[in-house]
Length: 332
Image (cartoon, rainbow, N blue to C red; front, top):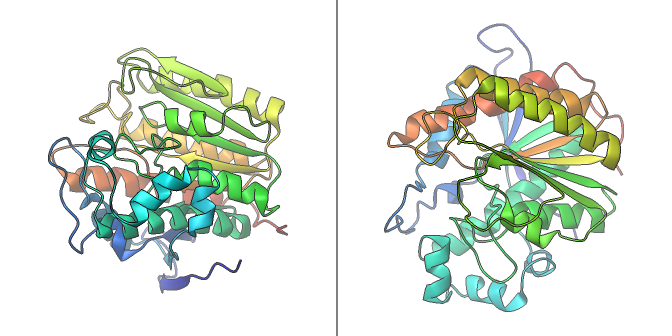
């Protein structure tokens, strides 16, 4: 199946600081669910975060190239999720108990949104194969399970994209690194038992979900872990996973909710700590020749622009780190 997309370049020869890296970022107008989508009745999820992220990127001075995805094909979603549940979402007739688990009603606007956000992670993966790193400016929906969504997640773009990369022979072994403050229970559940997909989750042990799934490797962190403690854990576990699993592609759930000011976090990372985390992820992956596609993940607060700025800074940090490595010479 051919998967088409559109590209828009925000041409700027260099960043304001003179560095010439380019961020390839996937975005679609439906990410903000601006056409009739409801605001959640409760909780801290904000759809406006997604267009604010793009505003931050567009005004950053960095040369970025925007790519708009096509909606994820139904059969690709059904390869991972229960077809009956996929049908409920496509018809926007999700039972109320499942909508409560998701955290908002599934309207036709939400159906279009989640098809595009899932298509966005797939497109980011294709762009990463060309450029070494690319970002989806949404998704990272790691709580979605086989027959229901949960925790503001409808379909699990990480599991769907990993499955499709392998099915299309674009990768043989996919590593999913989940550094959201919440455990990626849906991703772990959907990929359990697969020898060709490895899930690594570093998360706040006492945070949502209360009942954890079993990732390939879980690193549950105590409340209040700071930059040094977080990096001690990450630098110990990630190289071990690379040595033992030897992936040829990486999907990175780059949630910024480990930040100490995050409304739903229980950790204490600073802006500098998040940047150190993201540079380490790119460095460890790209020096081994492994492309990385990131998904936005969690980030919550009363001021969505502050949260959006953290997400934008994360993507720009990774693009800068990627610029130190050669462009991949071939793709499968």
